[in-house]
Image (cartoon, rainbow, N blue to C red; front, side, top):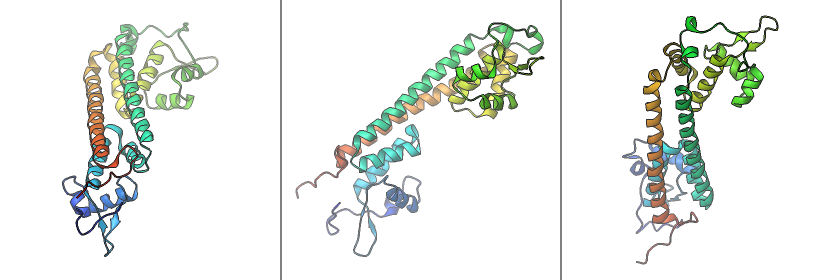
Length: 259
């Protein structure tokens, strides 16, 4: 990008960093990573940023809350490489993931509403384990959840799933309650919860027998999804403003207005 150092507006790294809680080194790193467009240098070798760089920084920072740092960076790099279609594809993927997370939350809510009070109650209130049609083994259950059997064993060690052992073969047998716990763990993991966060939730489901103990958690999850959706809207608006103000749909800078 050609820059007239006599008449053009020049900004220092500190000018871009100020107001965003960033260091000047972070601004330089963003340029090196392609998040900001490449800048010219002054005759003395200093970086000469412009209002276009400030708009790019605003667009990137607006994209981060909704898409995350790696995806937001990839979007900006695509724009500056002239691959705006790729940038839009990345945005579409984030929206698809958000939709999947909403479906996951709905599945968790539905699964909890369908809990059987008997199997969700205290262990002493459960019927004695017996082999029933819904009993299953580690391989089939892992296949149903599309995870590895090793993952189920990890959840078992964490206390999230409690299969019993067949007295003759020693194989793990997952009854209806264990399958329920595995499914809930799987859904909560997809919702972004860590194993140590899931343990008390599963235990509360086992002992309380209903949806009420998790209502606050589900409400917080829904709130996070709503915040992500709004952040994506804000990021889209900032990116559109950046494109319209100076990059064009090819990622190239727009021509300077006539003097």
